[in-house]
Image (cartoon, rainbow, N blue to C red; front, side, top):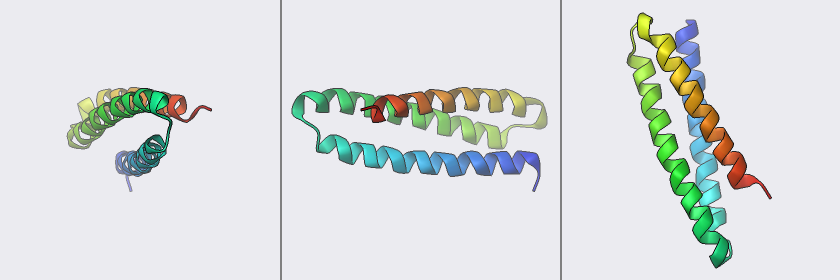
Length: 93
């Protein structure tokens, strides 16, 4: 497996894991108190938007030629870090 294929598979697996986490977070939000629920759902909506954007970047990365691949990889990694920070904010006590 090439480095490129390995990276793309790794990112797909991590996106799938992140999607599962967002489902669990949404279920947790449904049980939250009303005041916290609105804030939580707002953050979940933002997470969903960022996740979709990052997933689009993953698809662009997969389709990129060798010259553009590093550029898309950098953009994807930036998006991934942003997603992780938002997840940490959602899961903080």
